[in-house]
Length: 148
Image (cartoon, rainbow, N blue to C red; front, side, top):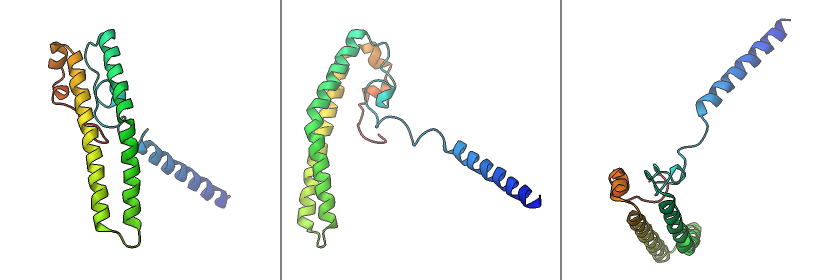
């Protein structure tokens, strides 16, 4: 009887501890989205106020074009990143090769940022002055990337 009581109390305490940890952890691992962008909550920023259906369609078309335009740059960036990691893990890392690969990566990142800036400026052209006035963060531009 005493052994059964001790085992029962231990199980209840263990479940209570587990429940406390689970409840404290929360529903996810950080904020949704992938950094600041333009548009709605799915893009990590507040929605643009009072968009018409036509404006929404224009912005979506701009975004779709942007995604198609940067697809090859993103693939190149991924490939160059893998190549850089391989250079670092080689038995005798070549400093010149690592520096050259880093420059290639920085160049690709710069191209992506320029295209993102162009997208932001094109989206601004679709918006009315009233919509822009309601979005001070939007009028300062927006970056792309985790935690931006």
